[in-house]
Length: 302
Image (tube, helix red, strand yellow):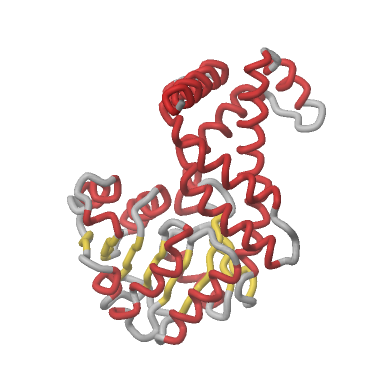
């Protein structure tokens, strides 16, 4: 099986930025970049693009179709709400037989719709679900691959540096379902801890609440862990809220009312408005900063 040399990367957010650098480390890769925010020269993706263009083998495109033209692999690492739009946008330039790796956190039904677009155009769609935070292991993070083309793609993924990628199922949507059901707990825990401890700090009982959590969820440093969970909502809440909308769709498609997931959407979307609190290194000062900023914003709105 021929090694992949020409790669288009859609999306230069947290995941895309990490993958771009890690793919280049492998050597021998020509990388073409596209992000819908390239129209704004001051956007974070534009700044990342400019830094990457200084490296050998990197080019940028004016459209997703242009990025895909001549490539053997397209990697989609956009936000959840742009998953289908990203798949559709490459079609004008998608070569026959081109692999399309969809890393986005969306519902199984959304993945199947994207697969229909790519496969109908002659591409080979591979569903992928990243099963851990991307930061610690980067391109080597555990990734489940699913769909009719997934098993054939696994060795190519490993050649590119995706050491944690593994064939999971030939059934479309199965990897996405696994990711979405996991997110009910992971993103839900972030939202629950945020809401619980912000209220607990108001009453001055946060220390007792954290101590009591060890009875059910033992952890060597619950205060630091809680700060980490809350920081994820402050930094990535917009993207997480979009993912949780897809989670709610997944739960609804299973015949259940997604009450918890819908509530998580609201808390995750609320959190980034208080991102200044990320500068606080300890939990209690972070809670106080959020509460102060929230009170100030509420007062201004009256």
